[in-house]
Image (cartoon, rainbow, N blue to C red):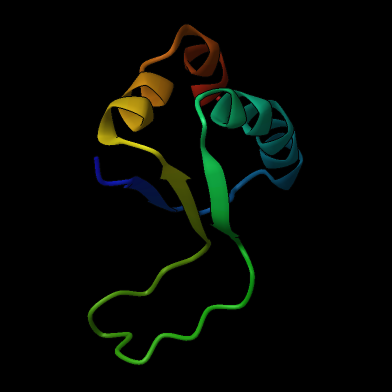
Amino acid sequence: MPCAYLIVDTKIDDPKSYENYKKLTKPVIESFGGEYLARGGDIFVEQAELWSPSRIVIVKFSSMEKAKQFLNSREYSSIKSI
């Protein structure tokens, strides 16, 4: 079964709340077998006219089903609003 990747381009308006979100989300992602491959850092964009990302997060899951289970989980639903 092929892996699935959750790719997020995040714009942070409230850094303090985002730190709380990261702290709460990491163990939930890991409980669904998720592994962070990228979490912020410097971005180089060759063709910015096509896409200008702010902050990239990439999480690898063992399957699409696991990624969907995480996104729709009770544990994550209470954190999403942050």
